[in-house]
Image (cartoon, rainbow, N blue to C red; front, side):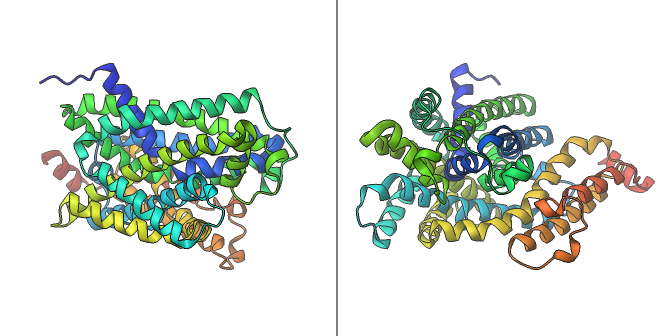
Length: 437
C-alpha cells in the first residue's frame, strides 16, 4: 500500500495543524506581553516562544515517538489515571475554556467594534452562529485537511503576512521601558505567559487528530505516520513563530496608539486601525474570525472524537453536545473566563510537560511504570501549590522552594524525581513478564 503523501498534502496537513493552534490565546496574549516587555522584548519573547511554540512542537514529536495515540503516550500510567488526565485536558481545551474563548475573542475583536451599543444579546446571537458554523465544518471529520488546510488557512496566512509586513515596515511607536515582572525577570514571565495559549494541551490532542487525518489519506504505518506528523509540527511551529514575533513587536511599538490597554485584543485593534485607517478593522476582523473559527473546529472535532471513543454516543452527537456547550459558556465573558482558567493551567501544564519529557527518556528508565507514576505525581503536587498561589490562597510558608516566587516551584522537584527514577530498578519477575508479552 502506498504510504507517501504529495507535497501539497504535506503542506496542507501542516497548515491544518497551524490553523488548529492559531486561535484566541495566540492572538490576544502576545501584543499585551510585548507592550509590557518594552525594551526587554527579546528575553520575554524567547520565554514565550519556549512554551507557546517549543513545547507544542516537542509534544507532537513525543506523540510520534510514542506511537501516535494518547494510549501509547500514557501506557505506563494506570489506565484510569490516564483517562482522568485526558478527560480533564479535553474539558479544558473543549467546552470549559479554550473553545468558548475562540468565540468570545472573535466577537470582542471582529464583530463588537462594528456596533455602537453592543449588548449581551449581540454576544448570544453571535456565539450561536459562530459555533453552528464550527459544528458544520467539524461534522465531516475526513474532510478537515481539504477544508482547513487547503482553503481556510491560506486565506488566514495571507492576512497575517499583510499585517506582519505593515508592522515591521511602519511601526506605530518606539519601545518604552519594561514594566512589572517583565522588568525583573522577563524570560520567566514570558515562559509563564505562554501557558495561556493552551497549545501544549492542544498538541496532545491535535496530534491524535492529525494521525486520524493521515489515516484518511491512506497513511497507516507507524514510520510514515511519525514522519508526516513531525513534518506537520515543524510547518505549524514555523507559522506560529512568525505570528508571535510579529505580534510581540507590534505590542512593543504600541505605546503611542494603545497606552494603558488592559488586554491584547485592544492593543491589536487600536494598532491595526492606526496602520490601515478605517479599513483596519475589516482586515483584523477577517484574520481573527478565521483564526478563531479554525481553532474552534479543531477543538470541537478533537473533543468529539475522544468522547465518542469513551461512550456509546457517536462522534456527530458529541459535535452537537460540545458545540452547544461552547456557545453557552462563551456568554460568561472574556475576562471572567481567563481568570477562571489561569489556576487550572498552572495545575495541569507542568503535568503535561512532565509526561512529554518522560516520553523522551523512557528507554533509559529501568522501571518505566514506577517512574511515570512518581514523576507525574510529584509534578502534580507541586503544580497544585503554584495553582493555589495564583488563585489567591496564602501559601507563603512555601516561599523557600526554588523558583516558587515566579510560579515555577514544580520545576526542580520534577527534575529531581526524573533523575532519581533513572536509578530505580525493577524486579526480575516484571522484566520477564514484559519480555514474554
